[in-house]
Length: 221
Image (cartoon, rainbow, N blue to C red; front, side):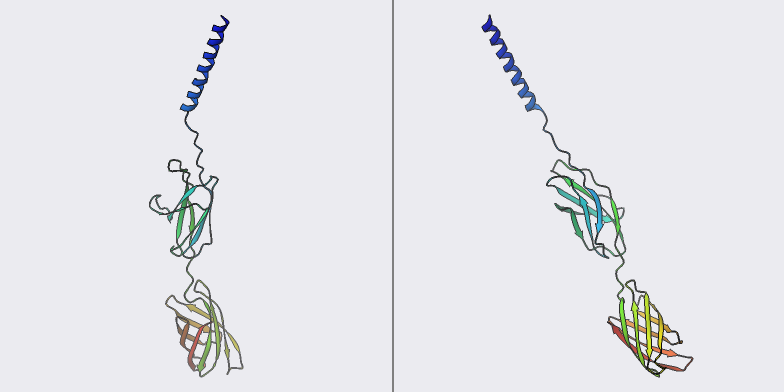
């Protein structure tokens, strides 16, 4: 009787062990969640380029970056695949709004949700006339002049030094037009009309109150 009891016990334990193994073999494998990239930011923005950044808490993972004009429909933008946490993009249009998002690809079948969309804008392209300009004027009066134009193409400051009027330094104000033409006036009433071509400037000046006039030339320093 004892032998029969022991035999039944061994059989029961063996059956239970096999059943347990079958359960383990039939269970679905555990797939880790593919985390969505986070902390999206933009750095090093210029008129035509920017660096897109994000954080990634996954292990070795490929990331899909898609960007385009602000409001673009996902799938219609420019796509870059990378394993890094940042990417540099160029060929952008100055003074234009863009957006981008990222998505982690942990495997071909394990893909994160899309991150939120982040907006950024490129800066204006520097004016072709920006810089410090200086030169001389001649005619009924002679002297030197200097003028500073900002990156946005607007007048910043200027002065004119006369050789024949008690060596007076005069303040200049000016308007720079998009075609490179410049209209300026000094505090003693002298006016000038000049044209910027490349790195050179040429024009004429006149003071109707004093009945004097002449020409001026200059260049970008």
